Each structure stands twice: as C-alpha cells, then as structure tokens.
Image (cartoon, rainbow, N blue to C red; front, side, top):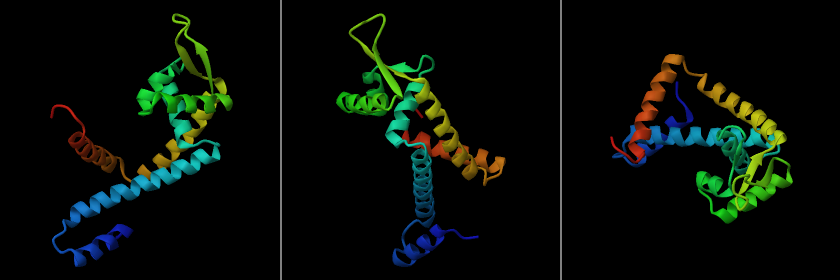
Length: 165
C-alpha cells in the first residue's frame, strides 16, 4: 500500500536520480507526521480556547509537581524565552485566571507564578484530548511495531543529542 509520500519520492527519483530515496522518504514522512500532530494539537487546544504557548506554560507549571509553581525566570529558561517575553505570557495567563502571582514566602523579593485550580483543570482537559489524538495515531500500529518504532526513533534522537555516545 502506498502513501502520499511515495508519489513525492517517485517524482524526485526521476528528477534527481542520485538522491537517496530511503532518506528522502523517511525525512519527509517524519515532517508530515509532525505537521499532522501540530495541526491536530492546535485544533484540540482551540476547542479549549488555548494557544500552544499558553498550554506549554501551564504544562511547565504542572510538570514541576505540587504546588505547581515556578518563577517567571525558571519558566523562561524551561521554555527558551527571554524574561520579558515570559513576563508577558504570565501576565496574559493571569488575566485569564489560569495562574496567580505572589511573593515567595522565604524570599519576598522573588515572584512566583502558581497554577490556579481553573488553570489546572483546563490543562488536564486539554492534555487528555491531545493524548487521545496521539493514542489514535500510534494505535494504528501493533504494540510490536510501536516498540520497534520507539527503538528506531530513540536511535535517531541519540544521534542528535549532545553528550557521550
């Protein structure tokens, strides 16, 4: 059975005979699957009235464990943002009632952003729906194939990550 990428690869095989068709097929399929997941994720988040950056910020707060809080500086580092950009994001989330800001008990100079109960509930609902999209996609493969894919993708990830090999 052929997919849409096969036609793409066949076209390039005619145009560029020296091209490694396996590499082209793999890379293009990875890109197409990433785009598919991005589109589906964004659609799910839109149903919850969220954008990706809002979800990721709530996700980082939740990831830290109870009491679901972090300084804006910590969030900025985790999300790869400038402190000023993170402050703007926390401002917006606070206006929506998803986070609260307060001074740290031990160091009054430090401001902490905390996930509110409504922010936590929204994050849980959105995460559940995003997870279902992923389950539906990966569920197209047998568990044996899923395990093989994990191993193969891990090998590619390790090739891109810094550190000892």
